[in-house]
Image (cartoon, rainbow, N blue to C red):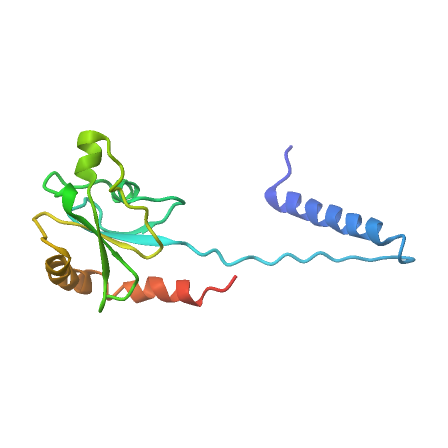
Length: 166
């Protein structure tokens, strides 16, 4: 019968204590060791996907995640999505957003992944249904949507991330 995870953990503790005691034996008469493990707070990185996607909201961020990966995690985009106009809002400060443009239409048409932007923690991806224009126009169109959609929940996700200390 295989050992349960709890039994395996106890066995690992005892073996570790014995190893430390054996290593200390040349320096001490009767060394005693006690091993203590602390649970490390797991920090979940995340991005947010909104707009013309099937399941908008928070998406856990994987290593080396790109806009395409985030859309796949949001159960893909709608048929009416403008894939050449996807915006990534970066920086967490919605008063002065840094907006990048991702073009997944190039990826699907030509296999060109150069505009499939690598994501950073707390990025907000917005998939439009209509042409957004330049960065200023895009900000004017996107920001009211984001303020209504994400502002009530964004601090709840961001504050634990800011308070985290390894």
